[in-house]
Length: 302
Image (cartoon, rainbow, N blue to C red):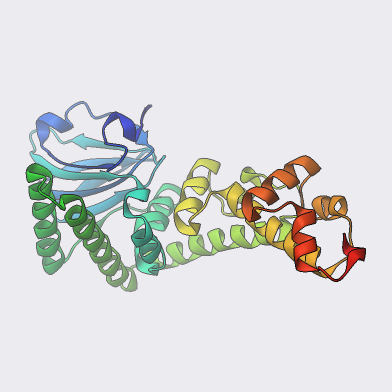
């Protein structure tokens, strides 16, 4: 299987690429995965989308998302034409806008939960847009293609704005589709699995907790869970765990007389030096300095 990294195709400062691919460009497409996010839209024709050994027929108006590290392949049908828009981007392209999108339940369902459901429950990972949805999507795609071609002042802002609108449309259309689909129960079940994993992290942070443990709670592969976690929570798995631990450390330093070493082990840091380093990196103070600043009149806590 081939694996593609974004720096091979995109500018690190503006990690975005849009291309219209026809039969010639799609020919020879193999099973692959990539570290960037991808949205595909079928402008015309028909093709096959191979996901986890299951093949879904693609037709005009189909929109589907390919999260990072998700294996798939688009295959041509003999004697058939196809034209598919590929929009590739790294999530950090949208910065704070992505947080707004990940707060939008319908977008999360379309972009992250649905592909996972398709992979595990053998459902077709695609959405056929309504007539209005197709019209709006094609207008946004045309604008992004035009902006990329001309690259006038402010074109990056225009691209990001149009991309964000496209993702919102996808979320809204998927929400409407889900209300009338048997797929709804699968999506809801898998959202609960992810939430269960977050609960597991928050209740086991004081132990030696590994990415594989949390991913198992979500019934996801570690790679897929890691990608989804960072996009939805805004930080990596280990950053999230350390933030919980350090927050608890601050509370214990303020409210108890436990030694710094006791606190370090109690919150899940097995090495005192690592705890000191992480604490100072986060607060700008050593644990002792933080405690002194928080309790200046209580020398017993030093």
